[in-house]
Image 1 (cartoon, rainbow, N blue to C red):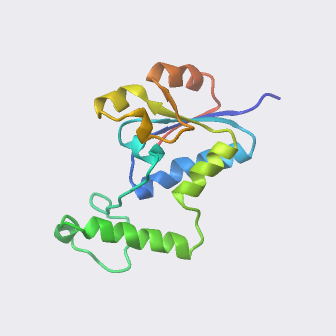
Image 2: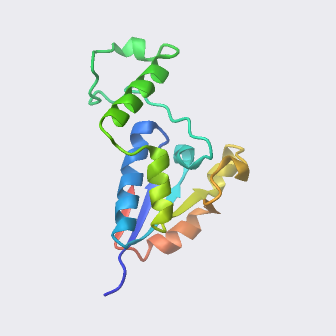
Length: 155
């Protein structure tokens, strides 16, 4: 039996959207799957050397809030930072792994993290903005791998 292959595209860079791709990738890696993650557009935030992930419930009314926050108030300066801090506190309280920990678990399991070259160029990022273990590659690099995988996920 051959090793199962998983391809994951991460296109969003907020704290809440960081969890699904890293949980799936770290779990697949721990199960012995061959996993590659492609970070494009705002997903590049997830592989930066220094994480400063934001969170907002704007546009997502399903976010469970400990207290109601009116939509207009969510757009005020500082509110998103407070919401991110509240989510991080809840994550810690519930003993959920941090994004930093999940990234490390992915690397330890052999998951390849690929930053999209075109998006890096578009947003004027430098190689030094990203973790050392990140591979830089284009869509063709990722698609060559994804074309022969068992599972493809776009998150």
